[in-house]
Image 1: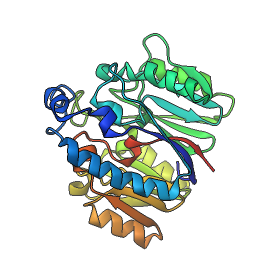
Image 2: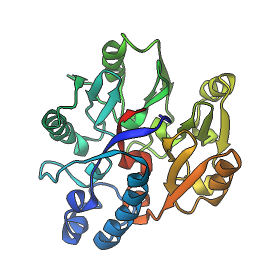
Image 3: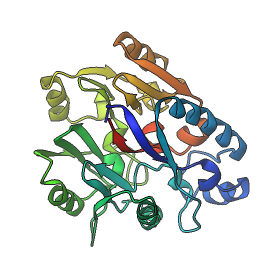
Image 4: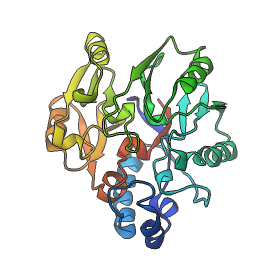
Length: 284
């Protein structure tokens, strides 16, 4: 989750949002906080991309598709990459389920290896899967990821995962809101994590401390502005939505380099920060 990001998949808002009229018709259905501004969203995204291009060698863009909706902007969730290829997931949010098929076709076209795909009643989002280290996988069990998915993911990864740790997620704001495991933990180095401890199970917080992690604690007001959603571009080199001053200063004090982008339209309104906007394919 923290090694140098070398290849990433993203989707531009012009291909996810399409136009202002489409946003006007769809934002309530997708449970956005408000209607995003199409032009501002593109400007914000270009600012975000300029940071990514400074640090990431290869950026692949998902194409526009009539089969998917606004949330396809958040390229992280339909798949999860392992050292043996991609696992094609099926979102616990029904409106997002068509994204898996479009993603599969994209990966096949780009000749990016696919390890497997969830089947039957299994549902999972990429935001519920966190690599604690190369051989330890944390899986959030909540409204977006169910027990059947966890069983299938364990089976697919058994050759290279020593420990698959299930993290029970809280009800929090309810079934319609998006709470992922990655909503309250972002790993930015082998021993540094940004966390919102109020939502974190005690065992997980204790596990991180036992493993030697320094925890950057996000204050309540900054959690609401996606302050806990921090993408590592390399060890202690990270990007976050602007406006979380306290969290940013804690990261800098811990020796991190922090980049910010204005993300009201592309992140805050759809509750998807930089980790959600990006799907890491490979890290060096």
